[in-house]
Image 1 (cartoon, rainbow, N blue to C red):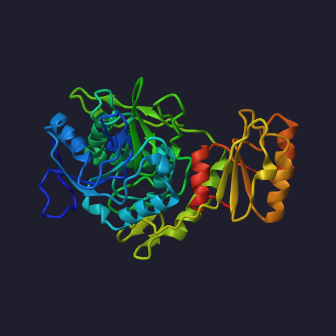
Image 2: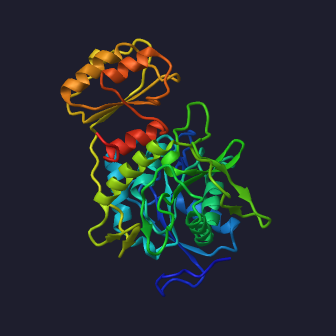
Image 3: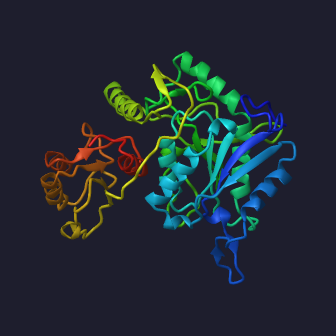
Amino acid sequence: MGFSLRGKEDSFMYGELHILLILTGGTIGTMVCEDGKRRLPSSGESAEPVLLNRLREQEPEIRFFAEIHTPYEVLSEHMTLGHLEKLAKCLRSEDLTKYDGVFITHGSDTLAFTAVFLGELMRGCPVPVFLLAAQRPLEDPESNGVENARAALHLMETWEDYIRVREDEFASGFINDIQGGGIKAGNGLRDPGLSPVYVPYRNSDGMYLHRAEELRQCQPGTDDFFSGGMQSLKKSSDGRYVWPGEWKRQELDGKKQQKLNEETRSGLDEQLPQEATRDGDTVQGSWLVPDISLAPDVLLLHPYVGIRYDCISLEGIRAVVHTMYHSSTAPKELVGFLDRCREAGVPCYILPCDPENFHYETTAELLEHGAIPIGGMSVESAYMRLVMNRLPE
C-alpha cells in the first residue's frame, strides 16, 4: 500500500516510498560477538540490511526504496559536536524533496541531544525525519528496533494526510505551538511552529511518539524515553500506527510565549539559505539544511553535595548551563561562581527556574548575582540551543 510521490523524479516507482536512510551506529546497528559483547560492524560488514529486510518481511504491502548514507558509525556514548556537524553536512548534501522521508539510526545514550539538535536544525523541512534507536541489537528477539522503524514507516506513509489536517487546524487558530517562529516550506510542512523531526520509540508499556526537540535522556536503569509532549501511538484496524489526534502542550502566559516566538523567529531569519527568500511565513525556492558550525564552548553543570566550583575553569567557555534541584535551588557556593562568570563575561543560565514563581530566598540571591533563569524547557534543549546559538546571551 503506497501512494503517489508528488514531485518525485520519474526514475522512482509510482507508489513507492523513497527513503533516505542515514546510518550513524548505535545499538540498533550493532552485532553481538561470541563473547556476548556488542560491536559495530567492521568494514565490509553491515547490520543495517537486517533492519530493511525485517521491515519488508513485516510490511509486504508497503513498497519502499532506501538510499543509504553513512557519514560515520559510532557507539552513541562517543558522539561529539563534530559528529553532529557531519550529520548536518550529510543532510545538506541531499535534495530532501526527492524523498518521502528520512530515517536516521542512532544510539540511545545520547539520542536526546541529537534529537534536539535535529529538531531545531530541520525546522521548515518539507519531509518528515525519524530518529530510530533500539534498546537491544536487532538480532535479539526482545529488541524494539524493528517495531520503532515500523511505526516510522506507517507515519511516513500518511504524512501528507497528517500535515493537511494540521494545516486546517492552524488555519482555524487551533494550533499555538510554544516554540513559535518556524517557517513554512512551499511544498511540505505547513504549520510554521513545528519541526518535522520525530522519535517513535516503544517503551516497556507501549509505543510513543516524541517531538525531537522535547526528548529527554533515558534515565539509568531503564530503557524508556520520555518527553514533555509525548503521545501514545495507537494502531488502526488494519494494524498500522496512526498519528496522534493532538499533542499535549505546555502552557505559557502571553509574555513568555511572545518572547519565545521572537527569539526563535530571529534565529531562523539569520539561518535562511541564500537560495531562499522570505515572504511572510513562506520560504520561496529550495529548502536547504542550514549550514552550521558547532563549538564545544558551552559548559553543562549539575549540582551535587560537595561540588567544587573553584575547580571549574571558565577558560574558553562561552556560556554555562547550570541545572537546579527540583525546588529550583542550588548550593550557596554557586553565588561565587556566578560572580566569576559575570567578571569573565560568561552568561550562566539556570533551569528549571521561573523568575516569577520560586519559593526560596536562595534562588533570589542567584538571580541577583546574574543567573539567567530558563523555564519550560528541558536541559537537553537548553544546552543544544545554546551550542547552536539559538538562545540569547
